[in-house]
Every structure is written in structure tokens, then in C-alpha cells.
Length: 76
Image 1 (cartoon, rainbow, N blue to C red):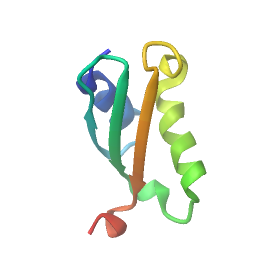
Image 2 (image 1 turned 60 degrees about the vertical axis):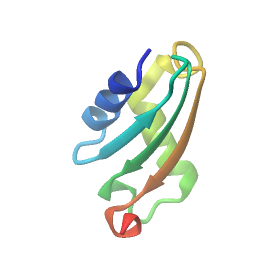
Image 3 (image 1 turned 90 degrees about the horizontal axis):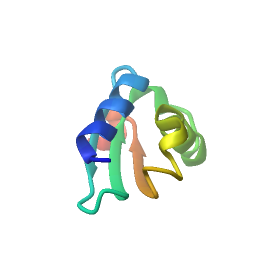
Image 4 (image 1 turned 120 degrees about the vertical axis):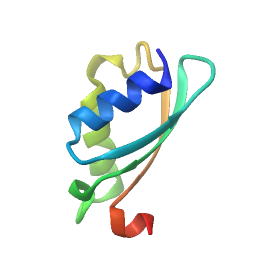
């Protein structure tokens, strides 16, 4: 697995989202996801939205994904 593939999956699964994904070892990643659809949602709900874009890859090809999820307004 690579960061670019994860970025594409997130941005495809959350229309209008921008994702910055990093990870050098192929199984541990961190991502900042900016998406208007996060507005009014608690952090856990936001994370679940991102995890849903990755499906079965979570816990498999992606061992760990640290997330920062913000709206465009929160991103500044």
C-alpha cells in the first residue's frame, strides 16, 4: 500500500475532500483530510467517514491510519 493510493481512495470516496497522506513503511500512515461534509460532525463520525472510503483495507493492507479531520473553515 502507498500514500498516493490512500489519498485517491479518500478523495474519491468523499467528494470535494482534500487529503494529505504520509507513510514510509507501507502499513502505517497519517492523513489530514479537509472536507466540507465534516461540518457539524464529531471527530469519531468524521473518522468513520474516512474509514468507510478505505473499506477492508483498514486492518489489512493498512495496519494503522492516524487521522486529522477538519472542515475547510477549521483548516484556515
